[in-house]
Length: 289
Image 1 (spheres, rainbow, N blue to C red):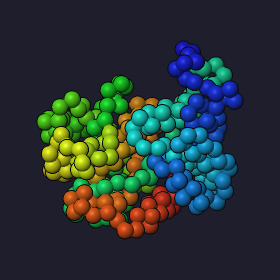
Image 2: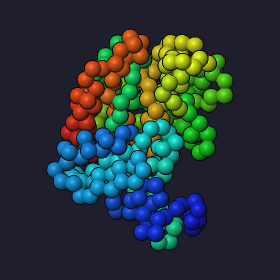
Image 3: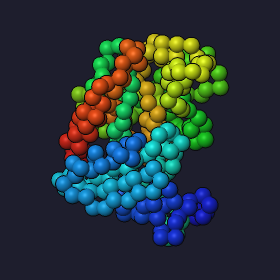
């Protein structure tokens, strides 16, 4: 079936609408970062940079680490941006832009988020590099997509919905990390459920001036248990990446540089060093893919 011009917008130069990329511009392994300034912090470790492109908050560098071709792309903040990035990355590899039809042979991408996060468990210190075993979304993104859960995902999500039942009008969603990426890129890392919030302040339990609707949100989050599973950290993109990657047939992993302890009310004095360690760890292991 032909995809309409309004459903998939292609620029006059043949590039995808928001990312401004052409088919062939991206590698099969894509590192996503939230901050556009962090793209260069990743690509400075490349042995060769093939090209650089940018539009709005979406900055893309493609190059090589050894013989491995890699793309690093900034998404900006939040799952609304993830909706754009994941759909457009998928279109670049799985839609024929000339015919506007889905290709018969689909290309799965390896999508690895390297981002910052705050721990909600007291035994996870700042400086930890954490791999998200699951992404738990408290935003509304997946209300608009059909998602098929595994039996394990459904059981875990059922318990989560009971635990967070007091939160009115919130419909959590859950997706597991790709096992292959978790056991290669994420090997020996601390693991846990990463909660993706639809905002930075009250949606993550922060109190500044506006009154929070959910008292002790952090306490509610860190008290959840399902067998050996617990929620370990908070951020704003992981659940959207995991869910859309699975829906579209891609593989995803989120690697989190823990910069804050939300239970000890502390923030790292050396955040750049923690992020740099996360980047180096991912790039050292990425050639295993």
